[in-house]
Each structure stands twice: as structure tokens, then as C-alpha cells.
Length: 137
Length: 137
DNA sequence: GCTCTATTTAGAGTTTTTCTAATCTGTTGA
DNA sequence: TCAACAGATTAGAAAAACTCTAAATAGAGC
Image (cartoon, rainbow over all chains, first blue to last red; front, side, top):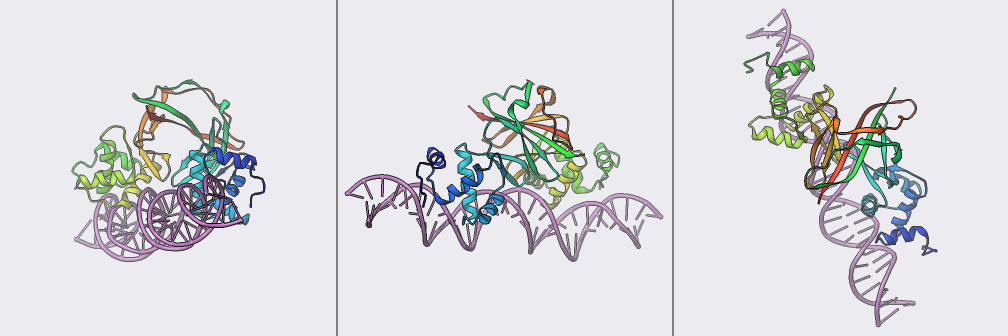
């Protein structure tokens, strides 16, 4: 089915220790071939369906989590009861427009600290996440 | 039932436009009489039950949301599928220990910015939230 | 106490996500 | 090329967290 077995996407999946299956390839294309995106599982599933790709919702969830574990995606939690997956895995932050549930990237270098706290004893900082919640005025 | 109708807690609820009912009083006591806390609805419900206070889970949810709307609590979203409610409503941030789902306050003045981004056109900053995710080392 | 309205409640419903167990599909090696 | 096997996918059930509904209950003012 896959004509070019050494395509960058195949590499990307193999490097992550994931077999380049039809479903994973399709989802990866939807996710990574369109610039920086923030999608929910449900959204991605709809997109796949719209693109005539037959994937179950369970596989969408599996794939999103596998990609996240592999460092291909970042999970963003800003709203109760819903996870976003961000294709931008570089150091950056987010605006969150509560009104419509829209996320927008803040480049990493747009935020700089003058002071940061020491982590609690016995722990080390994994990541500092900044969420700027904004409202329409 | 309530012997002292002008107790600070009654005041607090009245000021928020909420009748000081038995359930709200009990939950408020559990929440506010023990210093800064981060609780989930489920946790608070268990605590109430343990304290021999009969409250339904629906009322716990209602109350937490009413308190949040009234500015008596702050909702903190750091984990998919679970909301924490923080009794500290002053300007501050959080450490999140992923391993055990534990939240810890970072005083507001422990964080200072050297640079913050402009909000997107047509929006204004509501709140800047910093979550420092830490791991045990 | 009576009345009115806010509040509480049990239980059903929703939404998002995970699990299960059966089926299918890449991959490897003969 | 193909058999075998482990990994991947799937439908559907289940779980988890929360919300809704409609009926019962309880504060508050008279």
C-alpha cells in the first residue's frame, strides 16, 4: 500500500518505535502536514472520516497517546473534561480564549522570567507551562 | 439549626448571594477551616460523608461551582478528566507533582516576568497561570 | 406557622476516555 | 513468497467525571 517505504513520515514513526500502519500514517499526515495545530481526539476523528480514512475513535486515542509519549505531540490541558494535542513540541506557551475554546501558541521567547521558584524538596522541574487566559473585550 | 446567624461563614455565603444552607455551611467549613487546600468534587464528597454530613454528589458539584463563580474558590485544571478546586484565591501559581496528582501553591511573588506577550487582537488578559510540572528525582 | 422560592436530591443522562477480547496486519525469517 | 507471530485495530462495553431533570425539601419573610 505504501509506495515509498523511506518517506520522512515512515522514518518519524519508526524512530518512535511505531509501525507505520495505514491508520498511523493517515493520522500523522493530518496532524503534521498542516503546520502547528491543536486538536482534540474527536476533532481528529472527524477529520479522518471526512478525508475518507477509516479509523476507529479508539485508535485515534491510542495514536494520540503514543505520539505524545514519543514526543511527537504535546498534550495541553486547559479545560475540564477535554484534552488538546499540540503538534508544536518546541518550547512554547499558550493563549486560551475561553469563549470559544481556542488555543493559540505563544513562542517560547515571548516569555521570560525574572524570578522562578525552587521546586519542592526531592523534585525537579520537568516543564514550566504558562497559560494566558484571555477574553474578548 | 444554626445557632449563630452572624458567624463569618454565614456572612461569607450571604455576601456571595448564597443562602447559608446546612449543606453549603458544612462544605464551606470543610473547605475553608483548614487552610489552603486543593480538592476534587469526589474528595470533598468523601470528606463530607466521613464527617457524617449527608450531601449528594450533585450538591457538591453545584456548591463548588457556585463558590467558584462567587470568587470563593478557584478551579485548577492540570490533569485530563479532573478538576481541582483551590481555596486560595489570591494571586499565585502551582507546582504539580504528576506522580501522585498533588498540587502545591507557589506564592504570587515567587514568580516575576521579564517579558510577557501581547494578547491577540480584540482580547485582553484575564489571568496568567503558571504550572510548574515536577517529577520526583 | 404559611407561603414562596431557592436548594437539594436520586437517579438517569452525557461526554470523554479507556478497556476488552476478537480480528486483522506488518514484519521477519525460512 | 509465505507462514507465523507479535503488534495494531476495532466495535462495543465500561469507566469516570460531570450535568440534568423533576420531585421533594427547607430557608426566609410575613
